[in-house]
Length: 329
Image (cartoon, rainbow, N blue to C red; front, side):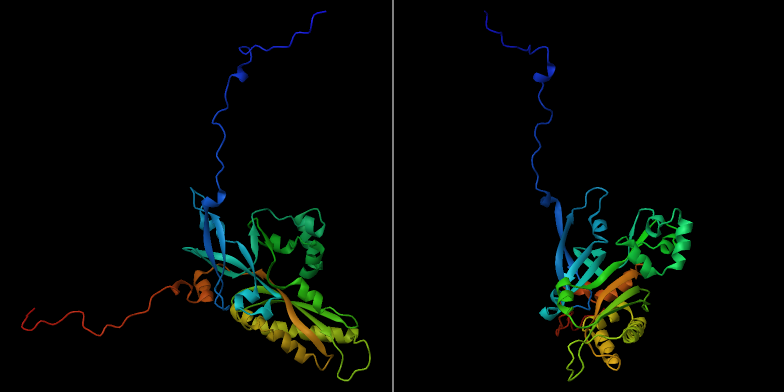
């Protein structure tokens, strides 16, 4: 019996065997060689102006680097912005508004727009936009936000605007989770309130307040629960103080009030006659709507952001031109 012959393939018949790959293997290029670093400049209300760096791909063709930076959001700890470790439980969100050279000028994070067509039917559960708007008339904005479960798209707001964009609520200031967890204790009541306020410079913001009941002086009872009528009275007082403090100032002055917790101290003092409170904080600040971008207002927020590296003037005692005696002009 003959051994089986090995299968052989003619090289000339299959043309792919003789062809080599076009271009060969591409060289691995480090993507960071195409990047540029920019300095993040915080508003002048903070003591540390240069709060970090960000990077982006260099300008190439029609893709401009500064346009890609605008709208970028940075979350910074208040301890880093004010060089104070006691404020590390606060988080501040800053949004890039303008780029000057290699400096990114930021402002407090406001409402952002997306280019997608809003669909209120997915939010309020109706089949068309008109029905969604009618359903939304019956519910307030806060209830609609809770029903959205993270979508945060208001049917009435989406229909009112003619351009196809949707408005998302942005958190400008927040408390860290570990701080909130450390505040919650047993045998007391937790009271929360929120209020939507419009500042003098056109920002629509929503303030969220949190407070906890505490024992009265020389109290022997273990618990310190507040009654429902007392909770309603405390919540009403919270809304009044937040509305009064925020509506009489602009955004810059409001942030100066929020950083030292002066609003929380006023609420705690005003509610002592109703029920003693502890740990009263403005736990979150949302910027729902902000006015049209104005470069002059942004420069006011940054103060002398562009004049940091300017040199000091030198006084010259000697005259620049010496008078020559006997010379007639």
